[in-house]
Length: 512
Image (cartoon, rainbow, N blue to C red):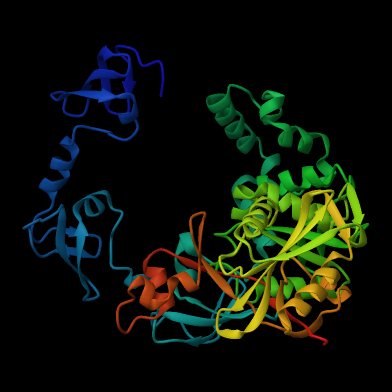
């Protein structure tokens, strides 16, 4: 907040005078007694001197009723009161929640009650079975396919109503908008238009995003000029990726086929690109096999799918672009493997060079298990690298753990050349895994590797935009309490699982 002047009213404070460029003497308008020195950073956070807290606290007395709560003790500690709910539950509740009406019961009216029975229909959900833990098994009558377990209050609580599995989401949304505003599309409502205009003027000083300076709104301006290529539901990262793709394939756009959607579809390559935000693609919203099923669905339609996680585009954008350049066949430089020199080494110097190239170009970066590297040089310039180490559970098995090329370079036949050299040097079979969300394994098969199996979806953990491997959440490493599972401990720490597409295991056989 800037330009604070004497006499100005901010929240419940009246500014009396400036004490310094960033601090002001203010009077509380609620009690009109307290004066306090506030800094610029305090405005919006400190709403009053605390006089209202005292008033609220005076309302909390033994026997006072707030909704279904009855106060049992007026000995308030830590600004909380011990209360009894009409259903019999007892709990300690913040006096602010009681006095403001934000807590009216223990939630008993939203739990499974006698009013709920098998066969009952809520929206498009039909109750199939009532469980003992306040959950219910429901069947979606909209698509006649989905069966899932959900909390019972999802069906009855107004702010948490789940009316379908998602198959009727657009229909339900349009019906809701029509009921309130009389139009199917909210953007056509004069009321919503007026509110949007008011908000834009208050925040940005313009009526529409397109009126903002071009250097701040390249994506928005592009959307205005290319409405047919953009879905209203596209997120900013999706638009950023799409804008970058358009320099190579101007006709790339969103694809919806057989009730499945691809954020970006390049018809010339039959290639789809998905941007998966961590929170919305976690176990809270998506089933464990969601990403794998989508990949297989489009594979049956002869479309390869690439999944990019939200944190990768946010923090490893250059590495993602390096990978995508290879995936769409737009690397500017192409060299044959015969023209390159491959150095097999376990020296610290060569390993450091390999790790630097991996960190610059590979989405996962380097691995600490590297024992040997195969560095590929052309005119003394490092253009590609592959790292090899022992399997973390089997010291006799050698693994190709990372392979990458320099950005904008394609080296034809280099993986085959590296594989032959590594197998000969190690005198052993080698295994590797292709990440199914990024690769269909075609490169391995062309290089002479044999497919062994497609492994099921695996997971990692996320909290906000930070990710944690499942290995880092081992019970012995994080001190999981006895009787608690790894997953339960992770949820308690605020972490959620995100499932990938699984991996394809390949093997390169050693030939003497």
